[in-house]
Length: 369
Image (cartoon, rainbow, N blue to C red; front, top):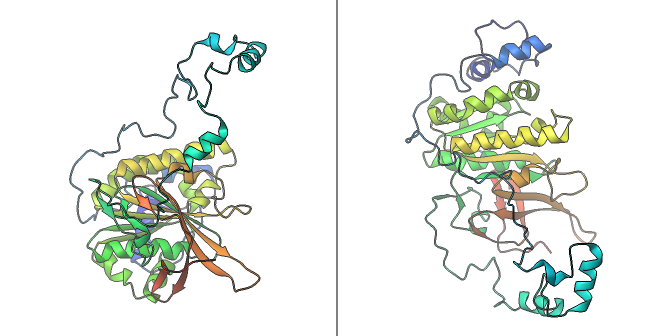
């Protein structure tokens, strides 16, 4: 990936060549604009030409499905009750005030007063989300995360082809979380891709081997691809990556993909508006690829329940929060919380977990407090 690479080489392909060869560490990022442009104009793919299988079906179910978070705005107001403007006493501020004070039967945002509204909101049957007393029926294919205790907190599993983000501060086990997610799929005969912007190819293999997951064997069988990319190079060639990624994932036959971490990609853009646009477009390309994806993100320095830039959790279908729980009366513990999963029932309780030689285990029956 250095500036003196031959013009016919692609830095994507070089990443794979490095991982299968001498195990050398990642080369330095491009040192000039011409280097970045040269790498972005390459013709070869991210996974090379040795993909083992092709996913059936040429079209992605996510193309033009209208589910974009940035879709066209509705022309109707969310507070439009279909009422006549005369009931508010006119269009200006004075007319609005007069209408509110003059007629109790004119209709407003709530038909009842606030007390009645809150009583109605709290008048349910008291069932907890974590109880799963009602049978959950769905035709959406689902997958397990592969983490003991956590899978039991999700009724039926997460829907296939969802985008998942795992948010946590340093030392909470975010990378292990992603590797364990891939390992579970590999054990079930799935193909998997791990894109790392932080660690080398060999470091990822060593982490997995320390837990007895045998990633090197999966890689030799063509079932796993580990690609280490420089975040600067990825940012400079993001347009190229977005265009290639869906086809490359389909060619490889990937069922699961992990990107560690999306925070480094976000940091490449100083402008908040451009950062959001680039990350949004990247997540859309993953949607088109039709692969179940887990993104790893650093937590905000001021809010452990939000990502560093406060963007990715709004662009994904599921959010897992890994956090420290500190107490003066006891030792610091690790805890996991499921913030959201679209199209799935899940527990909203915060549960403790541990990182062991076998990976992450969540104690579903224990309480953190």
